[in-house]
Length: 462
Image (cartoon, rainbow, N blue to C red; front, side):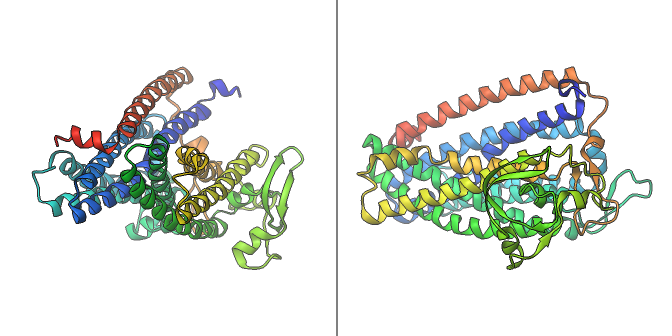
């Protein structure tokens, strides 16, 4: 079928564009939120006017990012009810609670105390004002938890049973559904990645001011804060990545096989880079033999079933290896791994610069760090593509421990009443509106960064 008129493909494309754009601002909000809270704590403890100006600077950057994140996320809710109506009917009994909780608890918490930060400056006590910054960050992290509860259930369903007529999943145990086998693993992984992003945003802004020779006191404090956050978060990220991989190996074998281009049963290698020839089911590249098996079990000889064997099983019989985009999954997964290595290298360079006191003199490093946030963003987007495309052809994946019958194929989840022309219109409109939003956000935040904390303080009424 022509992809240009394929409603299932276009519905997936539309949702991909929406989520990929929205997912730029989610980790930015969480990461910048922590930097904002730390800046307010420093200002509260020191009482220094420069620290207060710096804290206000971060409030402005966070608020702009938060606003675009909220605006871009609204379209997702409509998409569930229009393009993915059949999917919504199937999972509605499960998704209602976490999505409502996200709005009632997390979003309201975040919004209320962001209001205190924006309008309560000089009007509430300093302790409450500082606490508000932490509650805003906590709200953003709590919001991510509820969303990941819903998304993780799609990956590893639990706490539900299939309705008697087979039309939907029925909630039987809220706790089991919420804390399904991968909720904790995925949440830890996403939060640590977001904090790496936030830490590198702080380092990037500090590097910009070092290059310009402006606001150097602010730049030095921001650099140290960003470096510490990035260091702690990066160490946690690698721990979470290993734990997340174990969850995939235990619960989603077809995803694991696709990530390494594994068609046959074997001790799984770890490719440093390569290319999957889907026609002859082979991979050309550089690999460490058995290393994926070592990561999973500690033994290089542990064999895992390949895609062909899994496709012949009763549980994963709906898998058609000829239709699965194995090379795309392989590439985005290894892009994520490669970028994670670049992040580690960047962190080492920053730490060397700080230890030797040369960061302020190394213009080449400052220029490199100005663009550093691009790397965690690329890794986060690649990780999301790996997770979502890797579970195809299911939108609700029949994981190893999923309740009987709890699965839904993607081609059975979209709304048949939506037409291809309607989808193309919305895709074009979304692209235009999101481009406008991104340009506006980038221009505003860039202006804040160039002006620095001194201007931020002046605009705040000081």
